[in-house]
Structure formats: structure tokens, C-alpha cells
Amino acid sequence: MRLILLGAPGAGKGTVAKLLTQLDGSVQISTGDILRGAVQAGTDLGKKAKEYMDRGDLVPDDLILGIMEKRLQEPDCQKGFLLDGFPRTIPQADALKKMLAGLNIKLDMAVNLNVPRSVILDRLTTRRTCSNPKCQAIYNVKSMPPKKEGVCDKCGSPVVQRADETEEAISKRLDTYNEKTAPLIGFYQKEGMLTDVNATSSDAVVAAIKQKLGK
Ligand code: ADP
Ligand code: ZN
Image 1 (cartoon, protein in one colour):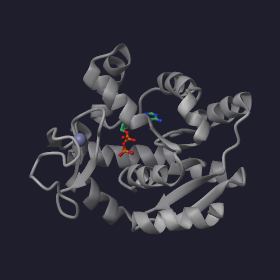
Image 2 (cartoon, protein in one colour):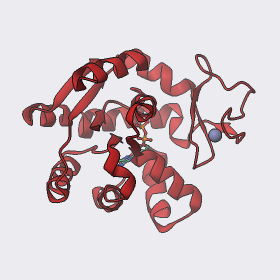
Image 3 (cartoon, rainbow, N blue to C red):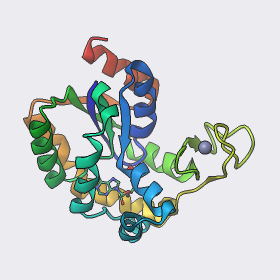
Image 4 (spheres, rainbow, N blue to C red):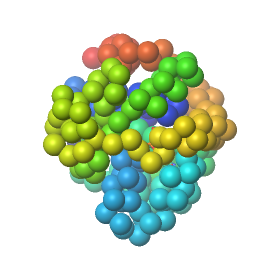
């Protein structure tokens, strides 16, 4: 399958993407994971991206488009892909449309994960992420803590609160989302590609997507 996952930070795009990869071998492409990996590895890209990310701002479109142009041409994308966190602005969506047309790739749909703001705030403040860039498993101190406190079940690395998950940065990210990313819902509606789902449980979202795709 070839999907775009839309939704506010904390809507569950990453969790849903991971569940969907298990269905048919489609790969999850998370620009957030790619950027955090680059920051930890101290690459040029990471150095450029870090200050924007820590503030809760978007990284400039040209950096993101450079990453995605390469990523979409890697062989593992042939089985399908789940775009998690990209596109995030109208210029990114326009560029993606051109990129896909050039590569002769057709998307199935753009899925908007609809979650009330109160749920989002609660999720983001209690979210914890594995610090190993290759793993980046997601936990929640209330609903899904690791078996051993502060240690990743999957790889044993420390589980941490992301630098952009302080209350100040979270509120900034939600404002940025409303201003820059929410307009993509209208964009994909006009393209006739939008599916809107109520996303209070990730399993329900996966079921709705499977049904839409006829799987
Ligand atoms: P979340 O969706 O939980 O906010 P992500 O992991 O998707 O977090 O992204 C973390 C940060 O990485 C964003 O706040 C932003 O700074 C940067 N980022 C990720 N994807 C993009 C993108 N497509 N365009 C611009 N910045 C991005
Ligand atoms: Zn881990």
C-alpha cells in the first residue's frame, strides 16, 4: 500500500504506520525518525535540523525534500510505503505530487487521523521514545510503559522524553500544525484522496484503512 498519514503530533501516525508495515511489507518512512537519527549521528543534515526541531518549528522544505527525493527511490519502497510526518506543508505536498508523477507512482489515499486536542496533549506529555536511532520504539508512561522502567523492551537502550516534548515545545508544535499542516486536509480532499478516521485507538484506525483498501 502507498499511503500518506496526516494528523497532529501525537495523533498516532507512527504507531499506525508500524502496525500497517506488518500487513504487507510496506515500509514506514518517518521524516521525524530520519531527522532524529541525523541529529544523533551529528551529520550535516542533523546539525542544520536540530535547532528547528528543538524549538518545535518545522525544518525548511528544501532539506526535507532532499531527503524524500532520495528515500522514495530506494528499493525497499517498491513493496509500498507509509509516509509518516511528510508532507507537512502545502509546498511539500505540491513537490511530492510532482516527485511521484516523475517516478510513476500512484498513492492509494491520504488518511487523516482525527484526535481531540485534550487526548493529544495528554499523549504527548506522557510519551517516551527509545533513544537508539535504529529503534525509536514508542512508549507511554501511563498506558504502555516499558517492562523495566526507562529501558527499551526491544533493544535495551534508555527510553527518554524527546527534547521537543516539553510543554512549551509541544504547544509550539500544535500551533505549527494548525497553521502549516492542517491545510493539507483540504488539499487532499480536493485531490479526491482523503479518508478521515476517528483515531482514538490505533487498532480501529488500522481496521478502517484495511476496509477502505479492500484488504
Ligand atoms: P510529531 O509528528 O510527533 O511532531 P515527528 O517525529 O514527525 O513528530 O517530527 C519531529 C520534528 O521533526 C518536527 O517537529 C519538525 O521539526 C521535524 N520534521 C519532521 N518531519 C518534517 C517535515 N516533513 N517538514 C518539516 N519538518 C519536519
Ligand atoms: Zn529500542
